[in-house]
Length: 452
Image (cartoon, rainbow, N blue to C red; front, side, top):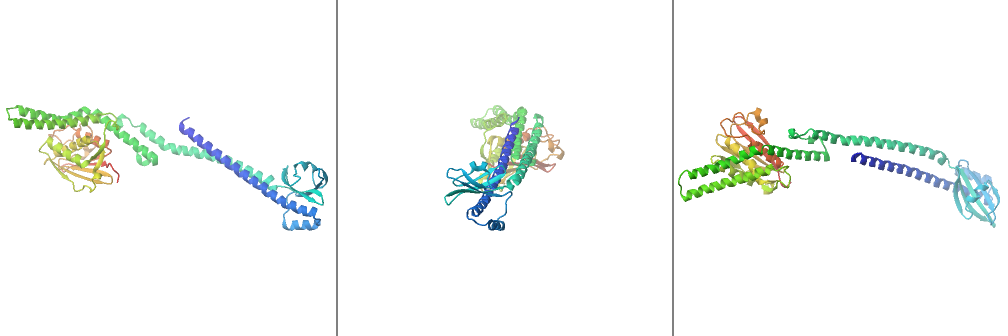
């Protein structure tokens, strides 16, 4: 028996016990009320009988008074018992001697014998001792309470059946979305990690669970893709700074130079080496398994600073590249530009996209706009280049894919998939819109570090 069924049985048992106790309490309360109320009515008739027996009122007068003001009870009788100081019966009227032991000889008493209820009281007159009593059959107890008891038992059985039916229905209704989610998750494997759960059809905690699953799948997909393409990514990212270092060194050794020229060359080599070191760290960071918090360090970073660092990186790669940045959309509060991320990885992603924008533009210019809106930071990177054919836009995130109109332009088809993986790792989105002959626009959205 699984844990859910066990808890469901416990809940059903608690409800059944509660309903049973509730029904029992109702029956006990009504029975107790019926007894108490009936004894009060008997007490009144007992007192009338005492007036008749002890105060010498005519029977006709008393009976007429009782008839006018008090209803006659079912099988009603009055009785008088005279007894001596030793408790022995001297004489009696309408009394059954077998009831004598149940009567209080010095006060009042109420008791039941069979279906008959009795109310008695002690009186003393002329040095004589009397017990006056009245008895009657409680029709409500013998008939109505029996009907009520049967009705409550039937209600209890129907209530238990209702609880069972509702419990089974609720179990199915609760488990159905969970089972649906399980089937969807079971269909996701290493070959289709891009598939996601439909969060919109789940509500409440299940919606949060679906969101958590999708976030986990995003991390796994990014991890699988990055590890699978690590060698390609490394060769793509490390090729440019290595080429720069080799070129600078070959140029310096091609002929004798002054000390100042050697120093300038060494400074450029150091810059390229530092750039190479940063990319190596970023790639090694991406290659770590799982992308959990203890393997990838995320801190609050300013996205405008990341953009400016990426610009410097791109210009260092090719001094012919031009970048125009629009900061007019920046918010007044600089905290809106902070995102929780890794500066090296974000710089690597943006430098790839900016470099592509410059590379595929005839004027070698990339246009960047930066802003913040609705708890998100957005970055637009646009070019006026060759564009991407609409039929090929669905393949641009595949490693090694290059558009059919990129002949004659160097590239490996690695930069954009790598950039998208990094953006996804930071909980953001990357979208590409392109028109052949007009250019390409890359839209990036990242959640802000602080919610406003």
